[in-house]
Structure formats: structure tokens, C-alpha cells
Length: 471
Image (spheres, rainbow, N blue to C red):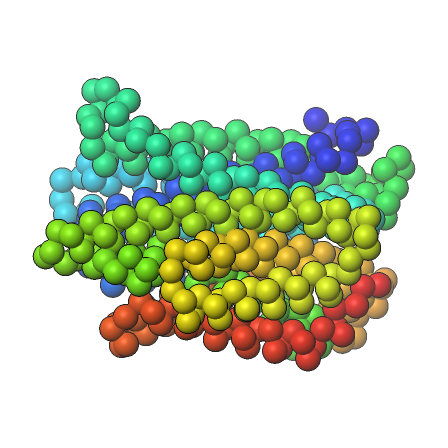
């Protein structure tokens, strides 16, 4: 399948197929993860904290994985071995996760479900970095912007279809499996596992990594060998390499340039805002807008909350649709009207801030939909700006203070550190927002936190936007 003559758009879709499956799986996991954890008998506060474990692991290991990927000498490439390994573990996790309910012993049930969930969630997070790097490796400078936009479009399609697929009552077609939540979850996760496997194979067989250097230089006809033969190392050599990777990650942080630090903070604050929406907005709609109570003895209050949660899920779908449409529009704006990445980042941040401010004082269904739309715009803007500028900084030698254009490629490390910003945002959010809701006794704090983070991000961006200059 590795054909330089492929149209650019088809090549990008092939490279993005795994991230389509990742977003599809995320939608399924978001809908069924917590209910399955709660059905093991786990208390709700502990079930919520489980969502912080994967980001914590990502913070610890992502830099090492990025460094190891940059220096990988496997004959199959630098990125594909990591994508394949993490992808296979994810497929196994998706297939196994809903079957914990079949275990008789409650203690074994809890341990089985928690271990599978953590491993599955971590692999879904970790696989994003090599997938994004694989894409950037395979694109010339002129195609990077469009590649990142098409990548975002594929992500949006995956998230939207995953949400729709999760909402269909498949348990009615369960036959001998029965009409129950357990049947529904087994069907949904089983189909997702098969889809993930097919998408994974499509990605790793799409573009030969020996082509990537020529592609990044904009030459699709003269290909040169980038990856050396796979070498066997002794245990001591592997230990030395591990220590070297950790040292390189530490050195990367120490020598990070100020423009890249600004980009890192932009990514952290933007994804903190977006993650607040994705993880807690259904709770906000059910509790604040609809006035329901999740565990109330009053049936009417419980029904109001359930109705609000369904509407909140619809808002998540609106967000994905908004991101999809805006991704297409951004392609036109950047290509035909020459809109800069500076303007794109400022527009999405400030517009989202204004809409959240309105929702803070007017909490109703209309403002909830508006927040959903602008969150989609924000997500598209961040995805395009963060990774396009990261690739541009890496090419022009602006990632590290002492880096030159002729320095060895560190695109894997660069992308990994942007994902560390995302993981850190999710980790801090998971630890703090639930406690804040409990402290103040109301879910109104969700929109207040969303506004505060967006305000800080907008101020930071306004004063540091000059560092987003493209080479």
C-alpha cells in the first residue's frame, strides 16, 4: 500500500485511520466507562478518580516514549512499532473490559475491571503521540497545515459516529445474550474492538516510513532510506538506552525555548478548557439547566437529571459536528484567504471566552448549545495551531534554545511534550473539579471554572501571541 503516487488526501486519511478509531473508542468509553466501573461496586468518587490514572501515567512516560520513538532503529520504522504495540493492547482491552461482570468473586471482578480499564485508557492516550508524529513525518512542509486539518476532521468524524453508535439500543438485538446493560456494553465494545483493529492495520500499512524524510523535504519522487536495520542489543545496552532516553527528556525540558514554552502553555490551557466541557458538561446540563438531582429520592428530580444528561450528550455531538464543519472552513481560510495561525488561535479563544461569559450569567439550553459550538471551534483551532506550529518550530530549529536547523530530528519528543500538556490538564482537572463541586455543593462551579481557565488562557495568548510566528 506504500505508494508515493497516492493523492495527498488519501494518504492523510490512511495515516489518520487509527486516530478515527481512537476517537470512536473514546466516545464509547466516555458513555460506558463509569457505569461499568460503578456496577463493580466501586464508589462513585473512586470511579471518577480512575479517569486521572491514565493522564498521570502519560505525564510520567510520554516523554520517554517520544525519545525512544525518535531513536528507534527497527527496520519497520520509528513510529509504526509503537503504534502497533499500543494498538494491539488497546484492541485486547476493548474486547475484555465489559466481561468483568461475568466474574463471580466481587474482589476479583473489581481488580480485573480496574486493571483492564487503566491499561486500555492509557494505551488510547499514548497511541495518539506516535500517530500524530507518523503523520508529521510523512508530510512535506507545504502539506502540514492541510494534513493537520484533515487529521482533525477524521477525529471529529470518529467522535461523532462513536457517540451515535453508543446511543443505539443494540441490546434489543442481543438475542440469547439477553436485553440488559451488560449485553449492550459487550456488543458496543466488541464492535469497537474490531473497528479499531481494522483501522490500525490500515494505518501501519499505509505509508512506508522509509519515504518520510523525502516527503518532509517536499520531494515525493526521490526517496531515501531513513531507518536502519533492526539491531539486537544486550540487556546492558537496553538499560543504557533507557537511561539515555530519560536524560534526553530531562534535557529537553531544561533547554526548551520560550516560543515552544508558550505553545506548550497554550496547549495546556486550551485542553484544560476543552476537557472541562467533555468530562463534566453533561453533569452541568442535568444539574444546573434542568435542575435535576442524580441520586434524589424524588423520582421527578431523577428524571429531570436523566433528561438533562441526554441533552448534554446531544451537546457533545453538536461540539463534534461544529469542530468538523470548522475544520473544513479553516482549510479554506488558511489556503485561500491566507488567515494566519495567530489570528485563528486568537479568534477561537476569545470567541469561546465571550460565549462562556454569557452562559455564566444566563444558564439555559440556548447558551449550552452555544458553548458546545464554540468548544468545537476551540478544539479545531488548538489541534491545528499546536501541532502545525510544533512541526514548523522543529523544522526551523526553534524547539530548543541551542537547536539549529541541522540538528537531529526531535519531532517525536516535541509531539510527546505537547501531549504531556494535554495529560497534565486532564490530570489536574480530574483531581480538582470533582472536589470543588463537592466543596461548593453545586455544579454551577463547572461553568465558573471553565470561564476562569478560558480567561487566563486568553490573557496569556494576547500577551504572547508574537511567539506564534511561522518560518
